Image (cartoon, rainbow over all chains, first blue to last red; front, side):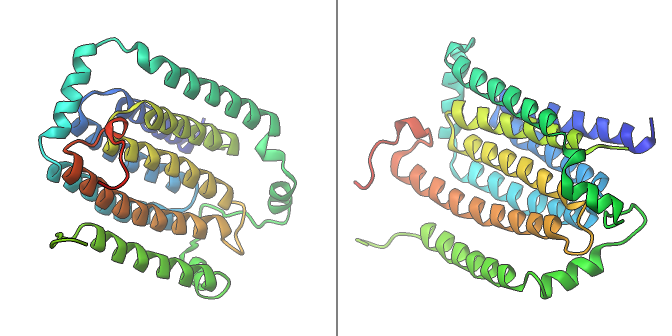
Length: 183
Length: 101
């Protein structure tokens, strides 16, 4: 068992374990901070999939941006959100959660079944990529290639996404503005 | 050698945990975290398959796009959540039952 494999299993365990903790804990603050751990370990998994640039972007945008945003929203919405959680705590055992658990577990079983059936390593284009040597090797750097591709082949999606990002920005600012009189 | 199937199973697990959170939680912020988990499962799939595409880098670049889209989604969703909180004094989606006024 190589070192990369050991690291992969550790990272995968941390990802799934912390995600389960996020899903199961009653404390909202704890779940947000455990979500940090999930995102960091996911960045590690991206590195192991030889996508270092994506890993850095994940850390910068997700951990630096989205999580801080979620914390802000949590703090701005005040004590009331915690009260909802306190009421749930008194119910303790959650028979009402059973359908959700059943749904998720059954869906997971179906997905694992599909994944093991299709046997992803033997799909045609992946075999072809391995045989023609166009898979990414650990000692190559892809950032140059990503930059060139982003500005040539994927220029249209890039522009579309920048327009969409600006629309989202304007929309978020519009939604969260102070209301003056009737709209 | 880490096989593709390992990545796919991890991302399936993430997706299902996100599904569970979306279905069962009574708090809009936790539902948003569930959506983020599902998105991350999808991005992990993109990255894992992108390893076999050295020339076009399709998987990695669309993973980047998906991350940016997730950021935009979160910003708008949190603005909506704050507005809903101002109006209803709660962010339990089960208790929000009016559209306007």
